[in-house]
Every structure is written in structure tokens, then in C-alpha cells.
Image 1 (tube, rainbow over the protein chains, first blue to last red):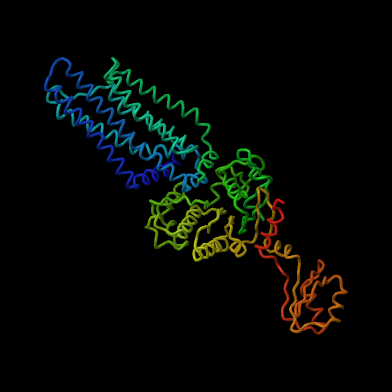
Image 2 (spheres, chains in turn green, orange):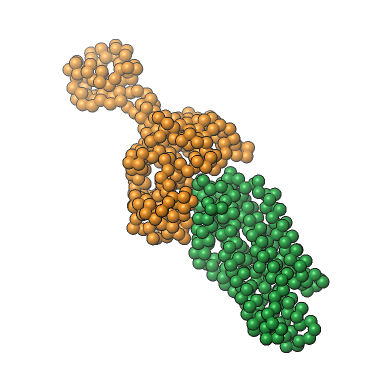
Length: 249
Length: 308
């Protein structure tokens, strides 16, 4: 792990220096989070607080939970979507990956480092967005009425399960991308993000299995486990030879 | 002399194609070894095997006695691959620091300055690699290859795409590295003139087989067919020509005005012929053993293997 430290540092620095990508990364993140927060605050949370009633607490838990969860989901997801393919494509075509493979670094070390370099900035952004939204909405709308509101299952889903899911996903996308075409790896990420949004909304709105329940937390863990199992199954493909041959320009 | 790089009967199959068909050669320590061959001959595949990037289907490859699959072998090697692998968004210093840290070079700062100075990029250390010309990039890649003071440098076409001025600079740099620092340099190239100028040993690969291998001067003598060319100040008399012709060990082949061409038997030196002619009163202006140029050798070898 100590060996890959320089690779993680340099890759994060290199990714964040790509000005266009950073603008897209931060811009998209801020836009999505602001839109989510505004929609829920103006149309759901505000009226719910004003109306009061028996269901107010559970409604607030649901809406606040959705905001938190989606902030994390989009924050981390945007990073992986924005950085994975461009950085992998560029590094493979310009010989960066092949050069790293010719050093004493192991193939799995490079894979892990590249996956973390894409995942970590998103993790920081997603968690920060979610935390800011949680605190801000609580203090603006909820604390004056019923005190600080946080639901453990959704907090766990947002702050732990989403990162675990995306870490597994980043590992999977990089495993596929580094041993084959980078675009193939990104298909996994691009399919996953909208699928998770649809799942989250459907579960919370249309079924009895709410987003604030422990069951939803377990579903998140299950998705991470599936991604982890796929990574484990594909892991034997991760050889220097496959990585080098897939770098052909 | 210990071998720096050794390949023994290395075969490599990619898909259904056998790219390397049992190649063997040795690069001795201190050599500047030129690796030649047309496109698709197997040069880059050989280099990838040597660097442990591809696993040989059979045979063995080692660097300074270590099997190439071992990390120890890779720690002793610096490399410049076909695509330089530099990060455009990073400065020259940062590019080097990155690799210095990967190789665990202690206190890299001072060494970065020294290495950049040695490749003539000291004044551009803070500039991003993306702003460099092709020649400067190759020099920076060379600097990176020397990051951990490796004993062997493996370079895949280090002057490809570089302008003539840049090629001269890189050539000079390679000579300095080999002669002043005592490193072994193995490099592939399409530039025969460059190889002829700086290499002491070569190997020529074509369609996955080594067609020519050995000490460059020796190969040039052998492929020059051992011709000795003597230039005289005056055309020699027919009687002397007939006398020389009657001496089979001299192997006189032809007379062109004031030039005599011999293919002497083994053991007969140029100086022996010169002494004999001088003894007969012939004034000699020049005497040399003809050597084949690398281009002639390259063309002759590849013509031999051309399919009918």
C-alpha cells in the first residue's frame, strides 16, 4: 500500500489539474445538489414543516434522507463519471500506464491507485455536500420545530454504503478499463448511477420499503457486495500482459 | 564480462501469431547495443519481454542475472518506451519526483536538479511537460529513466520523431551516459546511421528471428567480404599485375586505373600487401580494408529473407 502512495497522489493531482474536467466535476456536483436541495426544501420540506401534523417527522426524515443520499450518490458518482474514462484513455494511449508497469509496481497496485485517485475526490465532495445539506436544512427548517433530525439507517447508507458501493464500482470500472477498452469500464459506471437513482426513488415512494429503513441500507450493502464479487471474479484478468496489450494505440 | 541482458531461446505467441521465434542474444555490461529491425519485426515485443511487461511463452530472459519477472530486475533498469509516458499537466520536476518516489529514491530534490541539469533541462524544470518539444520530452524521459541510477537503460526508439538537432543531443547524451557513468544501453532504432555512430554491438531482428548479431566492427569486416583496397600514385605495370595475380594468398581481384582490389586469404594483413607493393617500387597513397556499412548489411540481410 505504501508503494502506491505516490501513484495515488500524482494521479489525483493530475486529474484535478485538468481544468475542464474539474469545472465539469464541481459544476455538475454543485448544480445537482443545489437543484435537489431547492426542490425538496421549497416543495416538500417547507410545506411539511408549515402544515405540521402526525406524519411530519416521518415525512421530514424521508425528504432529508433523500437529499442526503442523493447528494452522496451524485457527488461520488459525478467524480467517477467525469474522471474515469478521460484519465484512463489518456494514460493508456500516452504510455503512462505501460511506463508504470515497467517499474517495480505491481499491476494490482496500479489498479488500486488509479481507482482510488478517481474515487477519493468524489468521496470528499459527496460527503461534504451531504453533510452541508444535512446541517443547513436542519438549522433552517427543522431545528426550530422539532430539533436536529438525523435517521441512522439513511445516514449509514449515505455516508458509508454509498462510498463502499462506489469504491467497488470504481475498482470494477478500472479493472475492466485497464484490461480492455476504458469505455467498457465506464459503461458500468454510467449504467449504475441512473439505476441507483431510479431504485432509490421507487423504493422510497412506491413501496413500503422506505429509503430511511435498515432494509434499504442492506440493499446498498448487497449492491456493493455484488460489485465486489464481480471484481473478485474478474481479478485473475488483472495481469501486466493484459494491461500492456490493451494499451495498443 | 558479465551479461547485462540475456535472452535465451525466447518465444512469444500473441493470439495465434508467434511474434518471437526463439530469439537469443546477450548484451554485455558497458555495451551500447543497437537493436534493429523493420516495423513489426518483434523489437517492441522483445523489449516488453525484457522489461517483464510480457511473459515469454518459453525461454528465459534476465537482467544482470535476475529473471525479468522479479521486481529486483526492474529496479536495476531504467527505460524510455515508444510512448514517453510523461504527464503533460505536471512540470518536469514533478514528473521526475513521481518516479523518484516510486523507486524510493531518498531525498529526491537535490537529485532531480542534478539529473535535469545533466540532460540540459535545468532551466525548464518548472515548465509543464506539455509545453516541451519532442526532443525535450525525450530528454526528460531519459532523465526519468536515470531516476534511480539504474545500471541498464532500455530505450525503445528514443530519437523517433525528433528533429536532427534533437537527435544529435540525445546521441551525445547516450554516449555520455555510457562512457562517463558506465551504464549499459540497449536501444532499438530505425536510424541506421545513429546505430552505426554510437553502438559497439548490434542485433537485427526480422519476423521474430535474430538475423544478425555481434560486434558491429567485426560484422562490418565480415560482411565487407574482406576486401582490401590499395590506391597507388600511378597505374601499375601489366607485368607487376600479372606477378601479383600469380600469388594466390593475395587474392588480387581487379585493377581500376590506380586502384587494386584484393580479397586476401586469412592471416594476410593490409600491411603485408603494402610492404610487398612498396618493395616492388609502387608508391601507395592509401590502403584500407573495406567494411560494409550498416545500411548495406541491413539491406543484404533483409533481402536474403525476402519471400520469393
